Image 1 (tube, helix red, strand yellow):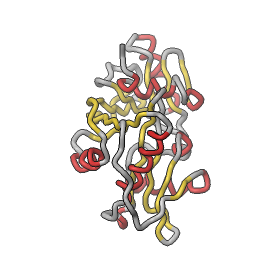
Image 2 (tube, helix red, strand yellow; image 1 turned 90 degrees about the vertical axis):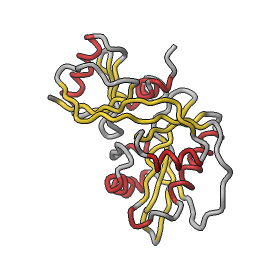
Image 3 (tube, rainbow, N blue to C red; image 1 turned 90 degrees about the horizontal axis):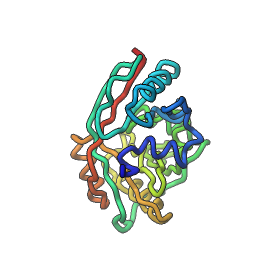
Length: 226
């Protein structure tokens, strides 16, 4: 049987997060305010045609699958990248930090979007922060770092949105934030996963230092209307 994490988008948005998905026959996409992700039930001509209709009607999408998709009617590939999917069933013990981790929510949405737009941790839109809990660090009132949750297949939650303002890097914000996000997910009795570009050795090393381990490679493909 296919593991839930082999098709994380389909697993999450036909399950616990179906309320933010737009369905069209054998395909779905996340509402554009929440994200870019999309998928099809299988690679049948009918399902791929449904996916193509969603792209043409609602704009670009991102697929996370075990392999690059076959040609999808009415679309063209913008980019394709191999990512390493990593999982954590435990996490290193917390360490003292000289900064406070604060909860983030709707009142912080504009700043969260601006930080993500600047640092590009991955697709982030006006309501992405509502997919899960987020925490951050403020310096002199400015949001300078954050991390949170995104996809939530049954029994799993994805850690995502880890980013630090360029003027505030090298202070341990990313590691401490991700450690806390991971610990909170594990405390709920779930397992944690995340994705990193496979060639980003620095990020992968950070995740491994927190007890994440590589599970398998997946392909992240962005499509747009042809």
